[in-house]
Amino acid sequence: MRPITKIILHCSANGPSCTFGVKEIRRFHTMPVSQGGRGWSDIGYHYVIKRDGTLEEGRPLEKAGAHTTGYNAESIGICLVGGVESDGRTPDDNFTTAQFETLARLIESLRSRWPKATIHGHSEFANKACPVFSVPKFLKSYGIEKDPSLVDWDSARWPHFKPGEFSALWGKGPMPLEWKKTLDALEDLRSMYGKPLYLESTSWKDNRLTCDIRVPSDKHAIFIRWAMDAGFTSARTVTANAVRVYGVWE
Image (cartoon, rainbow, N blue to C red; front, side, top):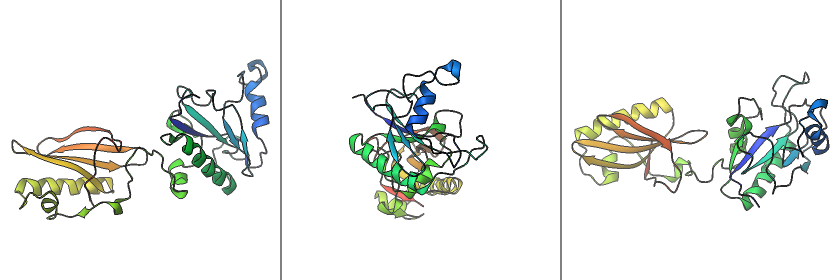
């Protein structure tokens, strides 16, 4: 079996009354290009979820799909039938509850085999509206983690602190003026992002205070190294095994 690192969600770009499934999509994907098809060896998706929530298997999982250019080798492609209005062109989040419930169960099953696989919409890798529905909203509504390697962003799990409490958390004693200036700047940063800031660590050297901060976003965690006299010096994606969370600045 090939390695799986991503589960990528798609739509078939059919109207709400479409009754298509694997059979019809396979016919289109394998039809010669000269006849208006794709000319592929098999259907490009590994799974198709019909309008009534029926799950159908497509291309075998052990074979790379043909659904996301550049990412097929290590991914699983799932297609939900629908995604456009009756005109066949205008994107429309017209998927049914039955489809989303089947999708959630399927992802849970796939995650049991590939627990580190991340979940994405096709639009993350191509300039397309596909899969049309909001993947982050879907994942949140069904309690599914997009990326299981990221830290759990439930701020209720972490210590909270406010100006004046920061030094006590770190056991540094009375807060130096430089710390107060930096914390004021961090508050401005928190207001800008509108989300909690996860402070990883601090260091004090050569009259320079450095704070490592994470800000969660819909797609990844932004890691900011804040130095009092230098502003932002780096930003990168951080996974759970890279750092440790100590507290939340709200």
